[in-house]
Image (cartoon, rainbow, N blue to C red; front, side, top):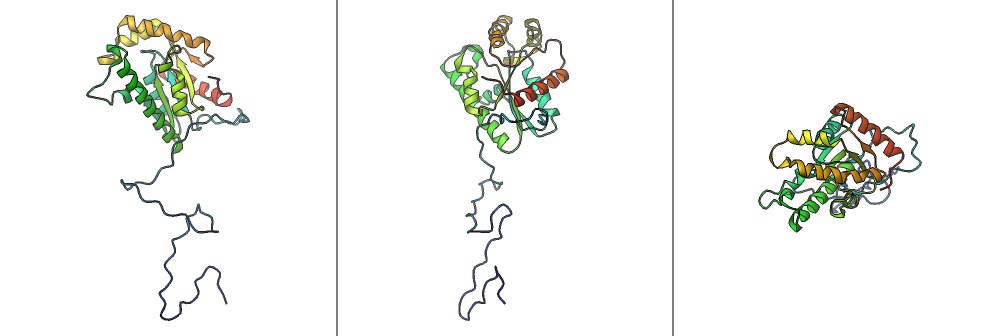
Length: 253
């Protein structure tokens, strides 16, 4: 009786059939199995490639959309002293699914010798390092999402400056990125800036200038969260609500 899938007896004097690799659960039984991938130099598993984050399907039902567990990429925009980093970290910490926080300022300061500090003047070198940091953040965000890890990024994106505008973020992360503007009152950002130290602390004049330019976001159509009177926990909860609405009805930007 012939058994399907079994090798026929090997005639005397012939070498045995080479052992066949087991079929991976994700492969189809028909046809030859795909060639085995060479292991990474680190010995780690090969990760899926990151792809641009896409806009949710228009047919998504807001009533059934579980924003708390959705894989999302959020960009928190705001002036110095708005609380972007604090809110982003807290939001990432409290989500019920794996979530990463990516701060553009942190990535930009990976450059040690030769760091082009924008506080000493915005020039070709500081812009080039900014663009490099933004592209690095976008690459990280896409790879996190490809591995089912949400992320929240933060950056002081200006509405009237293309070099540090939303276009670069959309290009590097994808059209499904959810931008949210965190914009408290001027007196709040001045107070928070005064509590900073090192190169993250700006002059009052610079803080006021940046805050004034951020007012352009009011006419952008993006969701704006004024956290002047909210603590971090409340602000993170309101951010949850904005993300849920943006997933159900993505903003045009």
